[in-house]
Figure 1: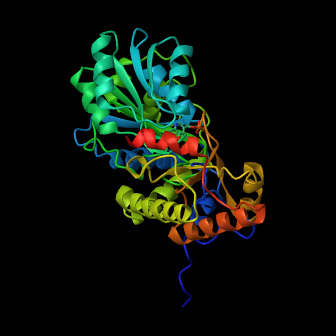
Figure 2: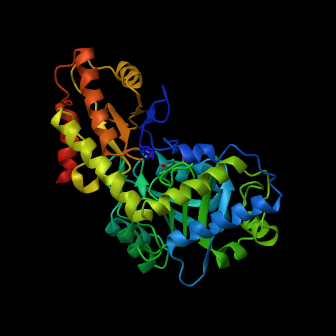
Figure 3: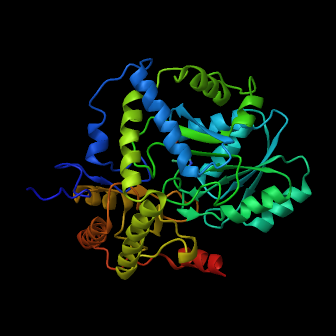
Length: 395
Ligand SMILES: *Cc1c(COP(=O)(O)O)cnc(C)c1O
């Protein structure tokens, strides 16, 4: 009898771990599931699509059967645009809660497609709070929807979606959620917080490969949205209608990515679903953050707002530290890291998601320390101005 293979072993000889929030490191079985070609119109592939929709819907616990799951080709942004263009009426107006790139992108999308938008921009690292949402909705009765980002991947902040949801519905508005980087590892069932639509994609916490995303929405809203979308290809209502009537996607589906995703869903279930996956990511995050702090690095966010998805670290102030060099050295040691996305301060990000466990995270910390030594960086401490930001947040 051979010993069971370590499911978190390095992807393959010479292939680095991706410490990025998607595409991410996937299981070998997920990659192997792509070694077959599927006819998109064939009954076998239609059965895959049906299972995909059904298994995803089960993850939000739609007890009343009011919701459906509509997959859409493209990256996550395509699906956000499909959701907004299809579900927000032409005369609708959306309160967008932005604290990073993805909230800003949603606002830009709404402007492009001619929907009304008001933005609450809390900057790089402050969460939008329920009371701010209540005040904004009270001040403008034209607002019909609230758009929130669940985990804002730009900083790694886990936004307080439950209080945002309460504020939205108390004011008679509907909540649309970008749960791209949270769904599958952070609770997002209908019993966790109320929403009318939620979007995620294949290559984040379910640990599939890129190629499509999916929107959970009410059947009644999709039925009412017929002909509304600004875009032919991103029309979620038309995609839904075709899926319901023929079992097919409207245009060429990413067949291999769908087959891989079903394997990823099986692995997700075997790991204990959202709770099991979330627990592993939290351990990854805790080991990473503890180790990096011990080495002298500082996180952008205080513990309360850290997500189990991705963590932003301030770049060391030591002049010997240069991010491009750090990136190359980390890559040589087997880890692809992620540049920061803050507007104000130098930073970098390390993802906790993908086929990795805490043992891998310990090696990440050791590699980061080795890189500093090789660069001649004496201290990993950030500039005092950077830290002042964080103190302001904690207050
Ligand atoms: C990944 C992500 C998206 C989508 O990005 P794409 O590059 O289009 O896949 C949207 N919102 C959030 C919060 C994300 O993390």
